[in-house]
Image 1 (cartoon, rainbow, N blue to C red):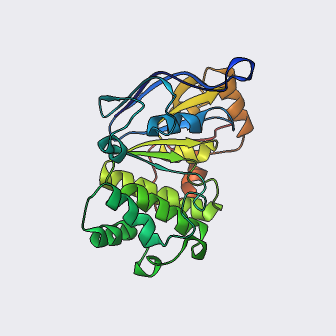
Image 2: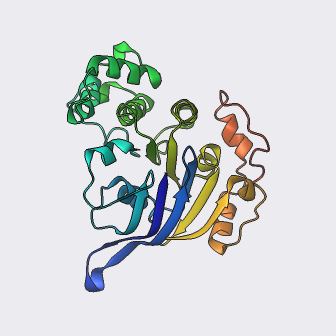
Length: 269
């Protein structure tokens, strides 16, 4: 569903040039949840923006649903892949109601039946009619992120890009959002690509994980391999050490409504 081949992104020229992403390649199958993990500044979010078409000067080859996409994206390309950003307040127009925020993409893509679509999208993310005509500042952080997820889902995409969607939320609300994303992925057959610096969050939602450092992927692994610390690259080993004491069952403990997985991530140290 997602295929990247030697994708690169640079900013500036000459002596001031910064290679934010360097020759990144990976494949995500349909229905899979794939994670990108690494410290701040490693290039994770830049990769997501390149996939979404928000960085027009990205180099390399990007294919979505088996179709190569270029710098100019069609409406169909935009509808296929949607993105949920890290800051749920900054990504919502402060002077628009929830209704306006959700109606805009429907109008842009000329889908029609806006009232029914908005009501259904709100219900799917656990919000009621009472939230529909509120402004972002009248919502809690978790409610704002639910609106952002509803906005992404209202176009019925097949791919959902998640840029640290829980990092601005407290732990209990993180659990609710992770449970929500797990359910939506199952019900809609979504392919998810998630960025995070938090191993507990990534391991809860993703089966396969790519580790990024200084703009490059240094290792691709699985949650199960992380569980047993059977990783190869020194940087991945350092990430595990920096997350000493993290256990995947603790991450699942934060999400009590999610059924426990067989062989959960144990003692990542």
